[in-house]
Image (tube, rainbow, N blue to C red):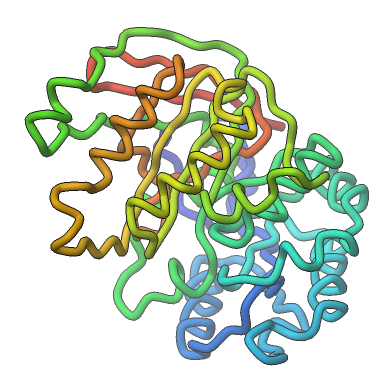
Length: 332
């Protein structure tokens, strides 16, 4: 849900009671090394052009094999982000690397920073840190953009993504809505339920499916009861997506939720021997396995147009026909 308000500028407030003006954004790299330096520079310049103070972590462009520095370097970068006093701590990119350093992260320091008003924002591999923060402290983080792939694009960044990010900065973002996509195949259309329901005060959590499934059986996976679980992924064949979902299914994670929201699953390459097996098949199978609603089309994932989602916040979910609305209200 986006509200009209002034663009970032010198004004300290507005009639709506929210604070506007420049924000302090801290850029750090807790996962893979930044390979596209031009995208990194473009992203920083774009945020600066909006009037924000952009502070770049001293190791944001570090490289150690495939990672943005060795494990100790990246743990220290997270600690510096938490201690920076920034309004937003934004990752440079995803990739891989956070699951291997979770035991070294000071989650209480992150929780204190969040309590003080800091928003940790990221996507993809960032799911590991978000889940761990929620499991260890209950604090809210934000699933959203990353610097390089979203603000550092060669063309113009997506309008909806930027508006949602601005909503976070100004405190206007209170929810999001989308239209459930029409199933592509006849069989999928015939088996798609006609949803009409409302849920209230359900914890929202989730992120990248592969990363989240890898946390099953560890202290870093939140034990969420009655939640709304959202999932997305990239470059995974539908059979691999189904296999990851079976991990969550057999671990009892899916049955404990009130709804499952499937975001964008991109980069899929089907083979001739799939013989019609695709994402529609996976969705049909998932709906046959669990008794809770499975909604598709959530505008979040490895795509240009993405909303921001508060991981750990209580939400209301309303669905009527193909219209879905997810509301979390004003988060202090």
